[in-house]
Amino acid sequence: MYSTPDQNPGAGAVAVAGDTPVFERTLLSPAPTTTPSPSPSPTSATITTTAAVGGGDFALPLSTTTDATPTATPTATPATTPATTTDTTSTATPAAPVEGADEGVTVRVLDGGSVREMSLGDYVAGATAAEMPPSFPEEALKAQAIAVRTLTLNNIEAAASGSGRHSGAGADICTSPSCCMAFKENAEVSNEVWAAVDATDGLAVLYDGKPILAAFCSAVNGRTRSSQEVWGGALDYLVSVESSEEGVTASGHGVGMSQYGARSMALDGADAVEILTHYYTGVEVGPFAEQ
Image (cartoon, rainbow, N blue to C red; front, side, top):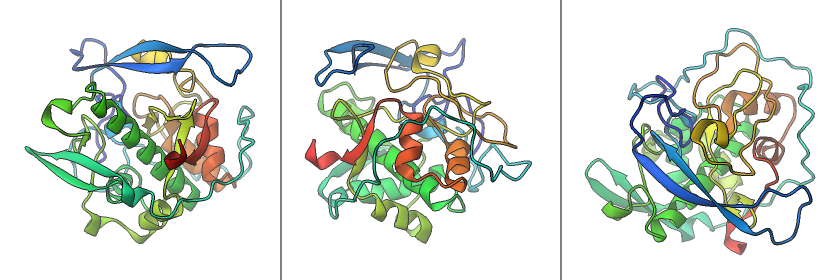
């Protein structure tokens, strides 16, 4: 599942110059403002990508190899000293899971030529297992599970409005890593991943009360990239931030959460909420069911 990057913008690949855009989606994001306000006025941002805006190469490459080793293979042990990143301004406390929330949401998954229905919990487990190795630290796995859940909810909302990539097929998301997110059957999901999904049940990354386009990638060279730079549409929560990840090579579109950056932060003691609020600017992590 982990293969070549730079093809699937949803959650891991960058739109490559010269490719023919296959997906255009209009997203709502609060208007930029220097002073946060309780109810910012939304402005429309159109993002055109050549791949998925959900998963896929974000964290994972695009081809369909079957091993669970990410493309960015560490060549050195990650630093154990605190990361030099100073722009993580999380004031949030660890969010409490909402037991049973995931089971109350049905996801319509396009798998090959048919649409399968499953609970949000089962889908998040399968996608998280395919997108991040179970050997990653617990808090990094939790952050990945929340990012996958958030991205899935974002896709469900898009499908409900008729603007989803698979709306025409009657689906919310698909199992192709070159389009949405990679997916493993539940029987292949490790205990570590199940634990991360259960521990974050019902939690999502929210901006102005709504699940964000929680893009993620494998690794970056010191900084992530903004959605404006990569896809041409500015989203206030997808801006460039520092990312400390030693011994790996940049892989993916570079937007949103870096998986190896999340790993490094977790090894340095950061929890899932701190990781997510670092990579997604101005967000909060909380129960999606209450929104």
